[in-house]
Length: 314
Image (cartoon, rainbow, N blue to C red; front, side, top):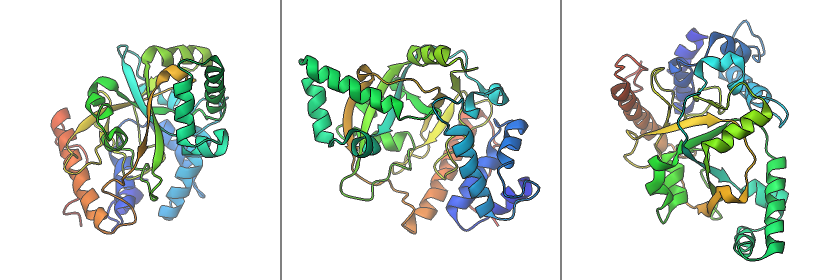
């Protein structure tokens, strides 16, 4: 595996090289969990190509991470116990949820109709019942994949900005939220206490409620970046211009049922980030950003030996 990843890290494709780096640099994945991943290769005794790796990643993610509502993802299973988070002080957490699939496929509502219903629910009992039903439908259609979240006190300025959906998407490194139409991506800003997560864990009877992010938890992509083992949390890759040195904490936590009280506000991600996959100029920019981010991680963790710069590779 290491020889394959070393070769792949020299790929002219920044996506392939970044995915290889994420797997090479990640110090938190146990040997047992890597073996669980490698079992999804077409031939577990060899890795023929990046396509083999990509297919294994897809199958592993869908089978072991993006699991049904009755299954525990590998993130919170004993094979991942070395990176459980157990002693996190009670924090207010923040998460950005895309609503396009809900509005179109589950609720059959426009964003404006949903907004109007939320406003009406502040003073109308029937509207309150309708909103509760919408949230029930939302929870019933969610799977049990681990939830990426940040700390509200760290991103408070972004949540209060006029264009908070764009700013928060960038700060939290959500590169998949890259609108390619004028409609944008409707999102909900969810804010909740850690206690809500712990209550859900007790109900689910999972071994853990929180864990540190790894390259195997979110589907492999170029916007994730692992951190040195001693770093207290994950650290998102900021997608804003000249912001790659910013380290923003992220954790993984167990799914819990959303309630209307958890929804702080609605908005739309209206602009693309600066590293779109369909623009050739973004490749070199992303390579540079990842190197800047790596430097910040080295400084923050006092680990000059962590990772490898993309610049100057042969």
